[in-house]
Length: 216
Image (cartoon, rainbow, N blue to C red; front, side, top):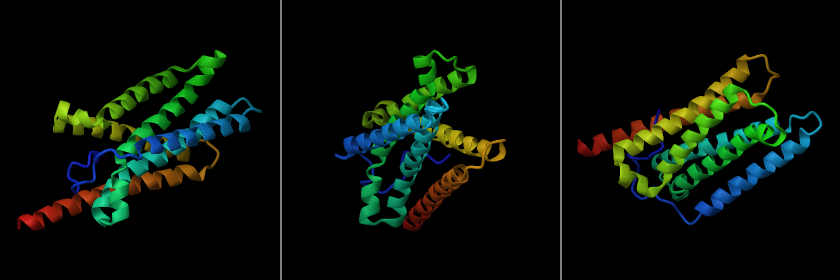
């Protein structure tokens, strides 16, 4: 999986900005509104928490794709808006962690609040996902790279990115081929995931080509 580290990126792209707090707050507000609306809509059939978890998870996928795409866009397009957007990658990573945490809370809420038993696969998913979110959050801190060194830091980012990409992709595939009601979202989500992966591969190829041109 192509990393989220931007280790081969153009100068000046990385680093947190003054918008980190705003981005995080905005993402949490959207997640809270989606969860609240889902609870109201699903209140009649008792599926409000499940709907909330699904809708917040969909929003988290959009934030995840944005976090994967902004740095390649800054390097490939090299315009002022794309480079400015690329600088917001740490903010988007933090926003993704926060929104994903809200989604996990929605998954666990029926068990915590209503005493409904939570299935073993659901418990395992929540524990594993929370652990990977902690890894992503830790690796997003600017001091982590200096503390662990470049290779270990990139490995952490790749593990976290690969996990969530696979979770989103496998969920989409499972919903498309399973006995579920047709939902065009999952096809759209798979197109986004494959598209951003190809975009990052193109970025890696172009970056290596530019370096080879300079050396030659």
